[in-house]
Image 1 (tube, rainbow, N blue to C red):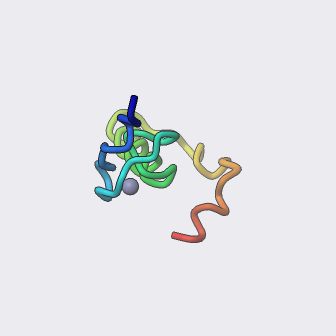
Image 2: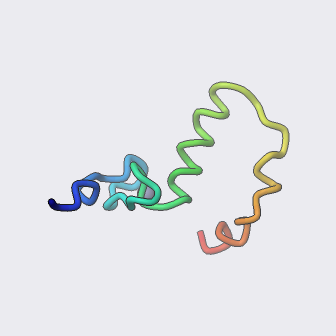
Length: 60
Ligand SMILES: [Zn+2]
């Protein structure tokens, strides 16, 4: 068998998708997509401000 998950492309930045974050390449892109539908669906006050990975955003 071959790794079938490696040929997918991230819908956000078009890089190769990471199996761990598929169909995205990274948590950042997953968050971007998540943020899009969250804003489109309903508003969460400051949910994202409580994420423990906020240091991850500083390398943006
Ligand atoms: Zn991406």
